[in-house]
Image (cartoon, rainbow, N blue to C red; front, top):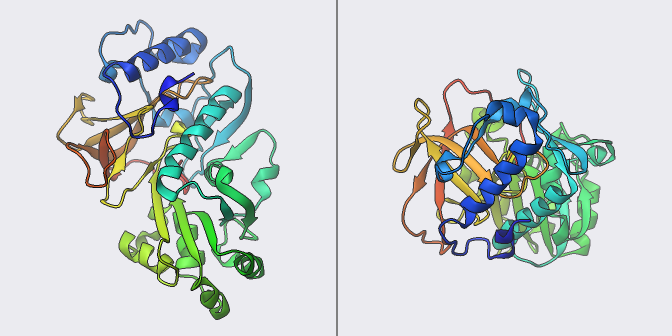
Length: 346
């Protein structure tokens, strides 16, 4: 349904292409979702991208939005903190297919297209849940098209010390290249700072690994771990060509992720857009820090195509030294007194 998804991830985009698709998607949701229509009753097109309706991210903790006309399958549920309800996003077959294509295209740009074993720092229990899927498991499975096999390395998803070292030994003995996914805090505590057996460290010296992680930095604040130390610790025993991909995203914007490029910026795929709004006036701003709004053309089963987050950032003008074209931004933190997000934002 999105023609932009058939194009290069960070290729050129004509003025109006994204706006046209977003306006059509907005009208689709206004016609089919009663809750959305109640919030944005009377909206008319003509205000450009900044004038498109949006929903605050907190609404998805309190309301389950659903647009009629599509077969809805499962509910994607965010990780939740002790003080908050999880966000819930209803998934339909068409949107899920588009979102899978989107995440895969973005990840290929950062980790390449080679297929290799995928090691997941999680347990497999949530794969057996009916009707719901966790954001963390959805993030891991977005890498599955690049996997020759999948191995779950934790006996208990909440305990980084429950690493199944024998399973890891077997995987390392049979292959030279791997993808590894884990939420940030689990990856650090189980692999980066964990008590890894010495024989496994020796095995790693002949391996090439791409680590992919998201969410969970908040749980490492008390350890004072910075990104440079994190990346260095993970890759120091590995072969050249190994790397670490840290990506940002929201469960409320499933399928669209923003990996950190080698120069420290996050790039926007052509089927998405990012605005920054003044947190007091909600006016879109270009050259200042503000509240991040994320948009994409992939969400057909419910109106989560335009979401105002509680994250703070700024749009960076000019071309990026990494060579990717299009819009880029810096993610700078959370708005004051915002709820802490769950440990696996996609």
